[in-house]
Length: 193
Image (cartoon, rainbow, N blue to C red):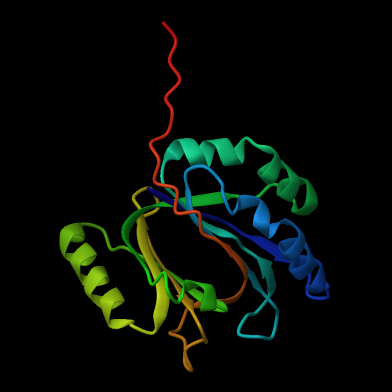
């Protein structure tokens, strides 16, 4: 699996109704996307638990093939033509938890990105993150992943309502749509002989 996110910082006076409209028109297009487990169409409005206007979709892919097919396809081409060429960040998941019965109730999300100290005991850190996530029983979904290139940890939670006091350094978002095909099929491997 791979977690992935790209982020568009929008001008302070940007009409966020444009983003909400775009999500309502195009969000369903990935509801059956091959190799996609979940896509959260996330956005943030300046002054509403955020210092800036953002459009920042978050994905969980079953395989690198699914992620690659998306990034080389029409969907990503369309979003990059509309908003610019983003840096696509990706992480290796340590934990994924979904309450499928309540997932459709998600209205907001929080994301923390934390540095991993050099020479950390990664196995202990992984166990600690799993333990912390099981304590967040109010979250309808949790994804914890790490980036071994930048040595960062990311924690994404989907919520019915935002926690009253998000932890410092937490980016808060609204959820415009969830595509949740949970496609666990094995990707086709092309080979040449």
